[in-house]
Length: 260
Image (cartoon, rainbow, N blue to C red; front, side, top):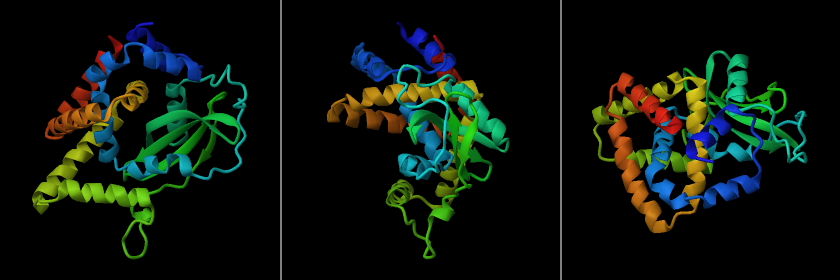
């Protein structure tokens, strides 16, 4: 299966992917493809920071969800999902028309297969939504969470992951003037807006591609990762100064390249 066929199968077909499939995929020209396609991780990294969603990913798998009941038991490994990621993100947006689906993945909750979808509204509050992998029905939606709601009365984050994120951002802005910081934050906002303005199909394509590249990233040596981080940082800085229209066009062009 070539990369184009794999892309279409993952994006358009119901997700019926076993662990053995991913293991096999990792072995097929993994290192050759890593160096050419890991730019997607750079893009996703910028987008996550841009929309202010980092806390939602930091404790993604640590949330205590209520006792939901889906339609596909996780024991049915031969049929993990009857809907695609596009279907799940569409269902989440239909249930919450004021928010955009910015990330999602298929996983197990309480013994059932569901899609976890992160939703983001205009004020950058995020909501975690669980979508049944069999019917596309919404099973759960968290209360809106803002980065300010993660802080205690002293104005500090109470979650260790949030503290690390805050520290990284402070280091990023270190040495900048207030005007430069404001400019960077505006550029980040524009990048996030460009991401949210993409079609659900394009957002899902990037998410799937990111997950594939993440698997390949885990197989790289420390030296290769360090070199790639330097390259990705340069790519991030190249995206940020672009106009809002150019940012969106860059994303759309990259997604088109995945389909070829």
